[in-house]
Image (cartoon, rainbow, N blue to C red; front, side, top):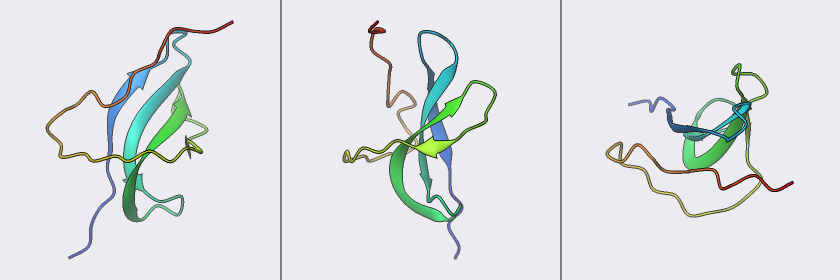
Amino acid sequence: MDVIPSNVAPAWNPEGDKVIFLSNRTESGEAGAWRLWIMDADGGNQRPLPIEVPLSYTFGDEQVASWGPSVD
């Protein structure tokens, strides 16, 4: 059985111009390990964050990531 990648648990940044979300897709679009991704508010410029953190997602808890306060 093929696994379809999922994008879940979005969170807007305080400025409202970026969204962080969790995805189990690879950069080639196939299913893989869960990673944090970021995109522009219009859905463009989607890319994985260049950090390694252990993630587990069971589709039960929607809020996985949140933005801290802005630093100027």
